[in-house]
Amino acid sequence: MARLVGKQAPQFKMNAVTGDGKNFIKVSSEDYKGKWLVFFFYPLDFTFVCPTEITAYSKRCKEFKDLNTEVLAVSVDSEHSHKAWIDGDLGKLNFPIASDMTKKVSEAYEVLIEDAGIALRGLFIINPAGVIQYSVVNDLNVGRSVDETIRTLKALQTGGLCPIDWEEGEDLL
Image (cartoon, rainbow, N blue to C red; front, top):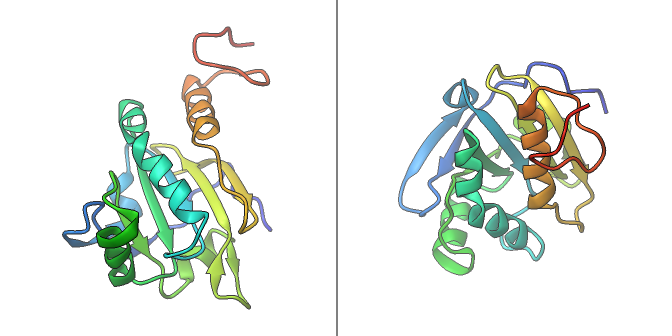
């Protein structure tokens, strides 16, 4: 895996469904210029760990918005599958889910498991200039922490040196 942190984020254009499941839209990296972006990949719709993560990020979406940050989820499923999942068991979300049917975006972000045709659980924090500031990639069976994502985002937004376990309001180095 090559280093992506500190580099310009790979560009993307994908079909997506709005979080309420009502509309099909197009999303691109251009849509997020000037804002922070939490961009996360998950393996597949209608699975077991994925809805726990997706709904947890959705519940905390206002906190991300308050930090000038958008959230975008993506998997290799179609936007129609995403819609069916939102309309069914998953429920409404506060951010869109994009479709990487071609697997080109998963490949560009180096999270694609080629022989399985799905993405690992990759999460990227991209700054307003489009540069990746943080990445974490988990195995398929381990969910991510929204608390840690928000803590890291806040630390990155300080622009300063943040010691281990730094929390908002604490001194910088």
